[in-house]
Length: 107
Image (cartoon, rainbow, N blue to C red; front, side):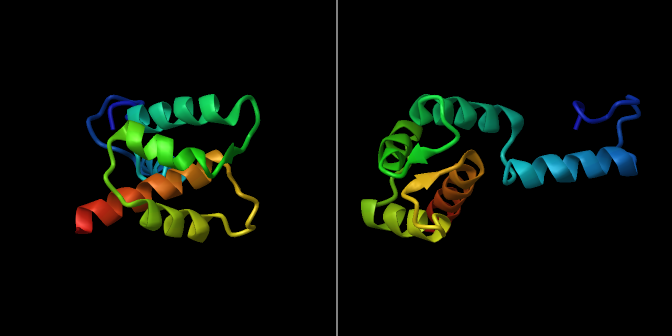
């Protein structure tokens, strides 16, 4: 919030609130630090492109310490990869990680 509170009032005006809402929409609710880490990981596995192979999800989930099963991860990935390209864009990776977190939270 401090990052968006441009006038230092300790509260958000409507414009600042809209900026927060847009940030949360773009990052699927991840904090800036979390989104930055995921973006760094994405850049590494995408090898300079704007898409990463789905196969990398298993390594990413292990690196991040998630215990979701391979079958459940594949189910989530298939749900997000709507065009069946076998690749994910950064925003799709955020969606997958959000679904993994939600799945583990509910377990």
